[in-house]
Image 1: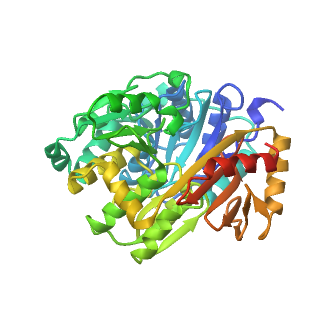
Image 2 (image 1 turned 60 degrees about the vertical axis):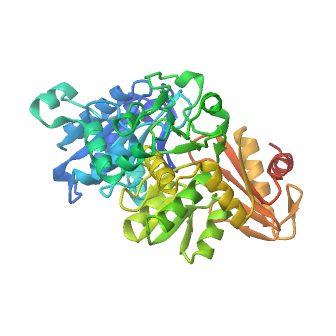
Image 3 (image 1 turned 90 degrees about the vertical axis):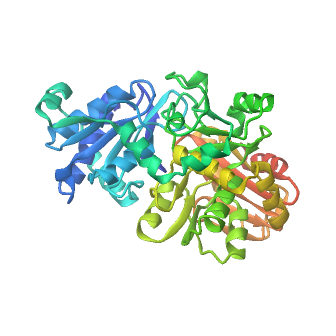
Length: 470
């Protein structure tokens, strides 16, 4: 079977594949045609769609190829005039009253990948039921012809450029108290990871920026804001007197925070401190929605403050769906993706970074002090995730072993007290929990572990990998 007719599979957050392997112009055009067919009768299709792209290799060209398919399908197509963040496409889909948004990005994946994300009319992740319809159409599409070129459609006005970054910046200026932040005199450093968030923070506050240029190899790393990738910004902070370090991933929907001592604040504490700020200082109401792999610290805070907590499978699309339909204060996944009430039913690393600055300005305290107050009130929580690359055979064998474990068995040297298979296999024990699941975006097994009061995470993860044969 040729690459042209390889199946395009959507994971937890869109379709991602290796450029030149199954991520080809032919397959991008097939995905665009399938999307156009599914949405041709959408009630807002006459308003058109919006397409954006990130800083990856040939993202602009892939976006133009997709736009040509939509244009040849008779759909008015807006395309950003430069690279933008994924939340910008979500915002434009909603505020331009479009039928949907398309973002060409592979988010935090290694540089060899690119991808195709879909955003709905409300500015959130596309409903899995709609994605399933697109995948169904794809099976019938061998190729997507574009009789008229991108430039021809542009000249005819079917395709139109849109200044996405300008729109996004003007919107955020109305949402964030930048005057309060600037009056607080915070010293801020930002690592753009060569991604689509570069040069945005400077429109709001004074900031030192790292990796703020286009480099499709991302410095021979993956643009993922996890602790192992953040040595440079942490070292910079330790050598100077910064109040906060902010990092966003390749398409700037996820965030990582570094405290004033140059210490990484894990995504669980990042989430918990924002809940505290929204609830205590901004007086937000509504539910908290969390992904299945997030910390029990969030559960403890919600229980103490009588906030309704909803737990959903992994993938922000599940959180987004609830944010669109219910009153949700904040929704977040384990990996640093956070959506805030009154903004978008969507992750936004730039918005959340500004919100963190606003929080520090309001409390007048450092991040480490706010974290210690949390520790004093709720106890210590230690969290780790291991991503294990393995063969398909070993992956399936490991998943089979984990699926067979039950209450009373041991995993990672701990006796299982309760199990939950909402997404993967989660095992609770007396002083923590462990989750085993296959990645929805990469050929990996992910193992998550959290322990209370004493950090046993690395030992438990090591023993679990031995048990699973990986």
